[in-house]
Amino acid sequence: MKASCSCRTLRMDLSKFVGVSCLFVIVLICSMEMIVLRVCGQAGGLKIGFYDLSCPNAEIIARQILRSAANTDPTATAALLRLAFHDCQVNGCDASILLKSSGKIKAETASDKNFGIRRLDIIDQIKAAVESVCPNTVSCADIIIMAARDSIFFTSGPFIAVETGRRDHATFTSSLAADQALPVATVPVDGLLQTLAAKGLDIGDSVALLGAHTLGVTHCINFLNRLNPQDPRMSPFFSSALKFICRLPSSFNNNITFAPNDLTSLVFDNQYFRDLLARRGLLTVDSEIVTDPRTFEFVSQFAANQSLFFQRFTSAFLQLTRYNVLTGNNGQVRRKCGFLNP
Image 1: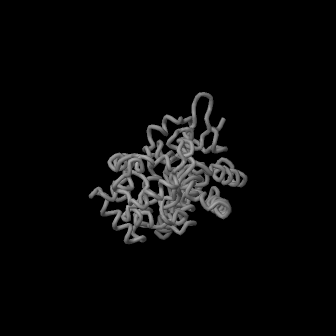
Image 2 (image 1 turned 180 degrees about the vertical axis):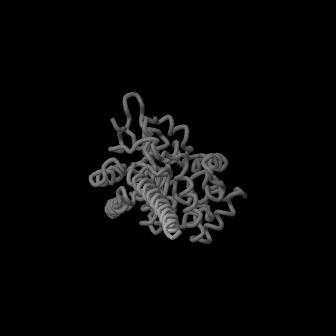
Image 3 (image 1 turned 135 degrees about the vertical axis):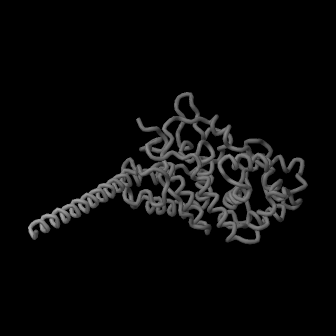
């Protein structure tokens, strides 16, 4: 009997040992699989810290290069924030805006609606630096979003914990795609709300995103329609100042003359909304969001409460930069941002 009990006990102990051992092996295999997926950058979808294992210094490198460029050219931050918006509005944030013309296909930057897009060289510098330490790992699409995030933060705006894991567009796009997707400078409030609603943004989100105009300038050609004849919704004193700034007659000269978007055009703040309430908006939509009852409430709130504006802008920016992105095995990670991989 004792021998029989000992055998049964031994069999039970062995069964428990085998069961625990199998569970340990399964957990180990699953853990290794997750690590491999993260290192290879194919764990699916977007996430904060996507490159933590595959290229841990990527965001640090991007931030250092942008800071150096912004110290030399304070207007670079506005340029890179605009770059992100214009990229994301054409088929999602996929760095298609960086592709150069090829044969008969004109690049997105050749579109009149992308007039003034610049400082692409900063994106190229970041890409080259990241490629030198982590080849074929970090997408140009993510670099654009990193640069936009840091541009906001470097100019006193909120720090936005953006997700990464985007991949780059793998076919050529054209200036026609930009012509069709980007709103015209004279877009009315209805048109803008419809465009952003298609990307999952509600009215408050849309107004908050317009607050990105707190950085940078607008070329005179984009608001001359409000000066001749004078738009009664614009402050007469402000209109006179703009006429003086934009007094050069030819369309070419109007393309090189510009006015600051608000009184603090190098600082990311809520001055844009305060200026709108004072009838100092440049574009058609700037005046319409003040007079439209659907949007006025948000303009008024953001003008009075900068923290509220920052909170709403952050959520809207994250929503926009998630829209229709390529992840996992879709798209590619371009070796050079301006060209498709061979």
